[in-house]
Image 1: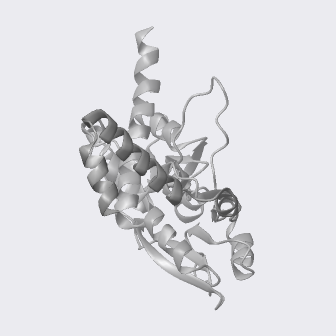
Image 2 (image 1 turned 180 degrees about the horizontal axis):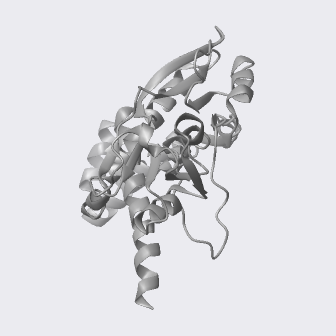
Length: 275
């Protein structure tokens, strides 16, 4: 080896460089993965995506239809451009059964009153208030929930409150396909109030153009969003769910949701007036 090094050192610069390149190529060749080993690595099974359910998902967007952001924050979980989550729609009872039998990894939504979860299911409260909050024009004469009686309330069919405003307060419910359409109806005077998740409306009211509609009825009780997990969900999957639904992610999604819906309302209310 010593003699070889001396011999290379005495060669002209160009030849010496070529010799060094040759040695480097030999070293790289020795490090290259053998074809059979590479094939065995590529044959390793890929991890299946997490299967998470929510109560409602918006219909698939059709070509030419207006863009509508989901009304529920959990329905936006798959907008994080990651391939390790499969989002499906399941009602609460169906989700409980699939979680109990480990056919489903997780479900996100609100829990029925006095419901007792099976031992096989883990529950975690999320930093999101799904409690119903009402917003109205600032010159409204409605000051209490009881005063919604026989008043019109705009609701999203994708939301959580359809049927509740009528049964609790004898309000006249007006149901729209999305949060955007319900909020647009409020702005153009089709209803006296709009009722949606407290955490969403608090984000929406940060925009200056919504200050004229910032009169509100605060929730009468706490109504959190919950993450339910199958007892068979492994640590890696639980870690991914924490990323998808942690406080930082929910805050980011909530801000984006409010911004997108506010813009959709603006477009529908303003653009027609320009023609």
